[in-house]
Length: 389
Image (tube, rainbow, N blue to C red; front, side, top):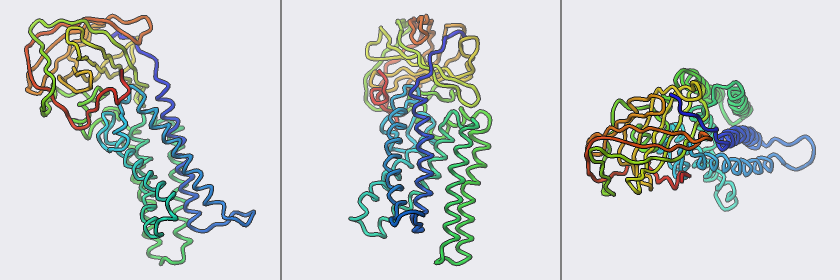
């Protein structure tokens, strides 16, 4: 096709950069925490400064985390809402892998809060919560590998290996140094410590570092995925969903409408695929907008489509029709969608691109007739929460 591409959002770069900085800080915090647990004294001076550095880095990591999360939420391509930051596996974008990050955020916040309140908590209670730091490390690495589009880059691999290797080495060294553990316990715990990153590496080789990860990463919670305007693997046909009371949209035979709005583009993933989203209001259906997401390889200033997601939704983000693109020729898009009752609607959209490549105008013409109650699906959030206009 010849749809022009838009500029990659700087928010994506900010979010990914903050994510890597946060991961490095997390590794440093983990190593210093293990050193602190061993009561290691700094060579110079009489104070135990390691705990102070550990706490200071923890607070700094929270600031970096806020930047990472804030940029991801503000980025219109990721379709990640505030709710997705704390409620796992509900995100429209790579729900499983973003979900691991949500779990890590929840556990990390619990660890930081209990650390700040340590003087008011019993040592056993504090220590029990603080043990959550270990799964936070693993979950953060899995989240970064699975949700990042640049995980296969050499610099990304270096960061993951360095952080993971430093943590594993520190944990094993600490276990060996402990005098209250028997040799058998030390061997078992050390083996588990080494086994976890080994499994993660094996998964990464066949997953994020493997072929076609961009599409495979979208699976796991498919209904939640297709419930939002998001980059996803296209389904063979229209998606059915469970209805609840909501506004009614009438699409009669010979339906026509003007359609205009903006074009958003994702950064290229490790396989070189990008996604274009065209989203805009339908002039003859006030209060409703049409979104078309095209996924594929850049070609001659446009994109060679491999999959798609089409959605007609109310302006508050509630989905009405869902489906896929069935034909793409030049700037003409033909789509087939269906409502909650399974009633189909086929339409074509002719697009005129703006001079800056980030906006468009066009017209929609279709056939079919339906009048039905709208629906809401778990994980769907109004676009106002996702940073869309």
